[in-house]
Length: 107
Image (cartoon, one colour):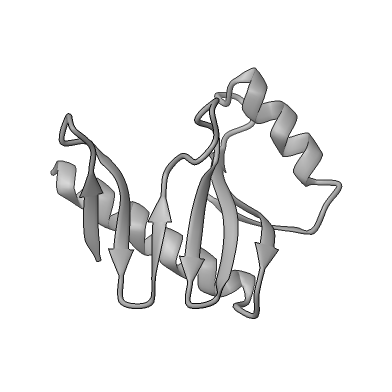
């Protein structure tokens, strides 16, 4: 996975063999976009106690739509607005890999 950096050398996404992932694609910077082959989905990390008001509102809205949530020790990876043939699990695996690589780059 090749990290994408912004002008301040902060990680803002990544490229991988069959897709890309971006941290934020909306004006409020609360959710990202992941693409695997011909499929896309939006995603964000959510923590009930620590997430801001905008993220709390989005979380409640997403719960009413088709979505997938993986609880990762109190922090949830939320995937929504999925289009294409890739299963939710493929998106989760890539997001987990991305988050692991991103954390590893800080150490």
